Length: 416
Image (cartoon, rainbow, N blue to C red; front, side, top):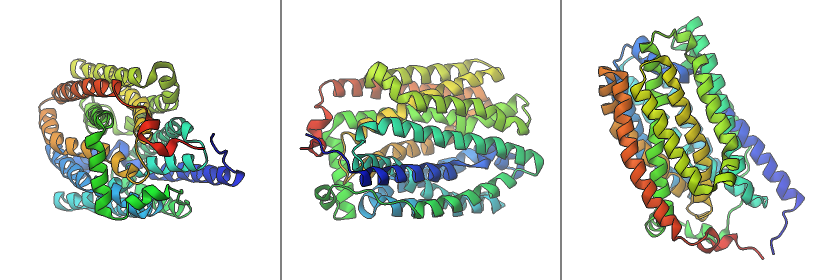
């Protein structure tokens, strides 16, 4: 029989959840998001191929830092990891706004990418452990969906304001303005309370290398988790349509820069609605049908972008955004329920690690293809996602069908 949480535990849980929401709001309020590509191409006079090379470098750095930063979080704590990450990211963005040439811009990416790596996976682990400490672990997927919706709403507001600032002042101003919000996020992170974790499992994380070894062994022996991570990586690559290709797509259709942020609003709203409805979708369809549906919707969006030469093809970006928004909370809940506290952030960091590796590999090719024609870039991306996500989906469905339930894999969930 389960033990009900005390009023003090519930109060601590609610406080941490509220502060985490404020933290991600500050972190994601990025005014430069709607104009960063044209900032590089127009203000810094780089070619799209150079931008793609920079992005490949960015994601290579992120890839190299992802799993070590996850192990850092499992070994030294979630709060410390938040503080390190937001500091690195803030300095990186500020340097990005001041750098005047290709070499300095690329150097700023080292700090920026490292900071992002420290943040990825940590917020999901922090929220899950906070919910579990308050006796509400079963509500994680819904809370994660809400957190994701808050992040997307903040990003949407930042992008809309950033495009306005860029049109009013210049393309550099939104970048420098965005750096200020990292200071706010740092102050909020100082007020977070480290969530309690299982003592026996923390003993398994007695060393940094032991955490890495344990996570690697876990993934080798748990095929369902391994393949759902691969699927999440493969479909997540489609987000390149929004982060790299949407701005040059709009520019190719002669859309004024001042409207970039406004046009991004429907895309972000789609993500918000998908994230908020994610838990309900899983309840209606089940995890397997939810994952399959996200794959079908992602492919539909890519087909639209690759075949329709009209600004209305942005509905394809919206479809991809919705698919990712309702897929990720479900996948994170699936992984969390099958992973112990001693390696949770490390295992969760494998997805952004894989995405970073994929971006580093694909960005130069997508950039070269897009310089020839933006629809060619979308077509190359369609081929990659279809092959990689399709294969990993089939492997996951097969592995999940024969897997033990989470309670068998994780005895820590059995209470008395």
